[in-house]
Amino acid sequence: MARTEAHDRQPLAERPPGHVEDASIEQLARAAARTDDVAVRRQLFGWRELVSTAIPLALVAFFARNVDWGQALATLRTSDPAYVIAALGIYYLSFPVRAIRWARLLRESGYRIRGSELLRILMLGWFVNCLVPAKLGDLYRSYLVKQKFGISLSRTVGVVVAERLLDLFVVFGLLVVDGYIAFGRTVLPDLNVLYATGAGLGVLILVGLWVIYAVAPRLARFFPHEVRRIGGLFREGVLHSLRALPVAGPMTVLVWFFEAARLLFVLSALGLYLPPSQIIFVAVASSLLTTVPLTPAGFGLVEIAMVYVLTAGFGLQQNQAIAVAVLDRAVSVFSVIIVGGVVYLRTQRSERIGGGW
Image 1: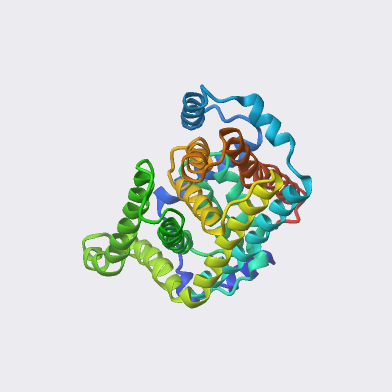
Image 2 (image 1 turned 60 degrees about the vertical axis):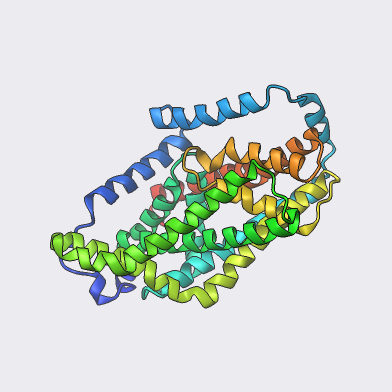
């Protein structure tokens, strides 16, 4: 029955007889699913997982060699549990907003799916992103949408790409505006790398959209029919989703308001204060570094950058900055591993019993 309902959600154009998904993307999606299984069973000992763990550990060890961890831990012990709970609450409020936004983007491709139906899948994708590098969680949640609703994986990946593009546009915009407010015309030399990274991503996004919109259709005739069809679905997933910008844009800004509010509560838990512009800058700069696919959730890179900005840029003591970084990542990453793990185990149990999703 569930299979029939999912089948009926599809437009007729999406149900060609003998549909064959692109082999490479199916292989990647199956790999993401296997990675999820392996992660839950605590068997992340493949070479990719080993490298993605070794890189951040080496970075943290190098930059933390002169850190007074006793002071940092003492600062952490002073944290107010009420504010920590508030940070968790405001952070998890962003997930329903993300799910509703994702549903709105999918609607532009002709699929009427409620945000509540996507919330669990979104949580599982975040869970995988916190465990493995290369944003495999985004591919994995696209794969789960295909399994549950029968939507073409190529189109679903295109919608997720559009979602990430919206995030990057808003993050880069906030980074530039709040960076100017927070620092004026004096920018720390080491932060030029951050701005260059953001500018480079912005240029790549614009070039990528131009290629998808203008170049890809002209090159399509040189490829076999099935490749053209798959490429067309991906292109439609990206471009059709952007038509939801009047609704999805404000929702994206709201998501990043929740991100900044989380950091505000983390600072308050430690008895610290920063102006709103500085809080927003730290929040979006940290999130920008999570897009670097070398480590899970940017582990190592984000913490180092956060401590540097808070100390060299905004005058916090080293022990205070380290406490902020550790507590913020506990809220935004380690809690997702716990909550996502519970969601994963409950999903697996439901499937074993036969209840499905």
